[in-house]
Image (tube, one colour):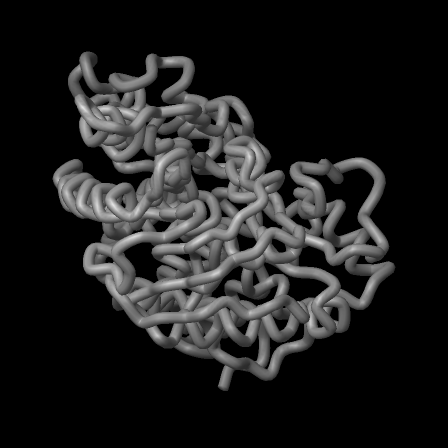
Length: 426
């Protein structure tokens, strides 16, 4: 079993590239101290978030890079990420850790390669922080800039072009920047808890905050985070999720709610924490519903009825309350927090799967609403075809009206890209 963060990161990256979701891989129990656990999360998510940029750099500095063992490639990625983005790790420590890891696994010859490559990159580091370095002059002029920016922001080229076409060049680059930057940490607090203060702390919702990595480090140093979490005083919920629930007015609703695609219960738990009744949670995975129950128990919240059911074939024909539909989506708004999604979005056609499924779920949910009741449709994507365009197509010429919709502003870098719509049966 790996005994340090970097060794564990190498193994976890191998699992992710073999198809394991990164959060599942990170949840695997390891015998690491809290600081090493934090470093492991930072390295794993950071390498995946910046992978295309890292690989572009390494390929430029290595000859016959395709012949290297895959674990050595991961060692180089980890070392390079540390040199470019982890200011708290000294350069010599980042290089020596990578060299030692290579030597331990592959011997002295390849360790010398690691040392030479990382030291050469270190000398050129200022240039690597500018988009111009990622231009390839052998590419046609018509695509040179967009390809360079895609490498710089570590995105598939088709995705950056898609965002630029959908929203314009300024917004497209803002979305690219948000997908690349280290995500801020969303925290929820129970009533009466000591709240974080100071620079880098921002209140998002009645009980929720987002913190920069530095602000979270300060808060962790003065509070026992694990104890607060275990006793239910503190929970994790992304700031964008907090924001969309508040913007749709769900945090001021009387309820009750049915969470049709409840998952692990993050949104339901947030509403219940505010005293808003959640009557029913359905999902297609009993594992997720079981985790939901454990989380509600940890937070001492009233447990909703849980039913294993497909929302397209719901267990009720009518519901006397509001419906929350957190629809499965392409997750393009949360690439910073879930960077492994990019591994499944190598082609534009990967987006085709979602709108038909979302439309079926939306039609199912709307059919259950009583008069003057509302359905909140939420996604974590910034793809118009899964958001506003889908809503308008689905409710056209019907007895439903779109009361309100909200999307995270493109230049809001502290929050994930969320979309929400509130639909009422007239």
